[in-house]
Image (cartoon, rainbow, N blue to C red):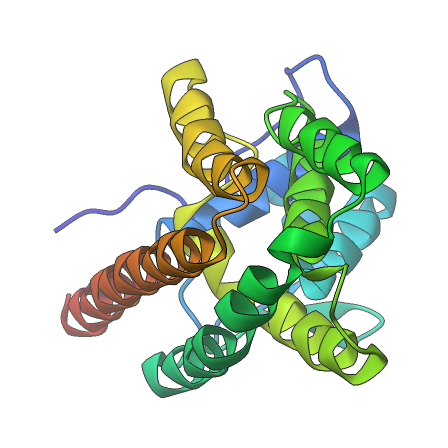
Length: 235
């Protein structure tokens, strides 16, 4: 059995070097070309990608913030290990906390907060991946903002960051078709409509389904990556 190269050169492409490097390393991780636990050096990545070490370092910092890599030393990194049990635990906590606070917040949104929700929803389908991903974070935070306590936000903030590591396995923000971008927009627009209708129970149900669906997709992706890893070890 043959496999595509772990990472491919990005030198001929016309775009931000950091964006291209980030996208290519993320692609390699999401496809399993760079399996969980794989260690690599910045020098080797620079050679394979056809760029200097400077965009490599910045890209790895981005990916570390997303939970996809772990920076070991100044010159090396490793693909973060994946755990279905870890992912399930994160989502279990979100499902217990987030839908309930969001539902309780529905009657307390001010006109300014509703306008902010609309703005974030529109930004979440921006073509720039960093803008879209930050808006997605902001949208979920805005859903709970009216009634969330400081401790609620601390807990949810930790869970949102922890979720990113797994969300990127399925919802890669850098390589997305216009149809998929619209589909994701629609899924979050349904949540906004429940807020605008003043339907707290409806928002609770929709957000619970939203998180449950994401959890199932991520679980399937982890299983796929584990199979790819096993195939490599036996080939």
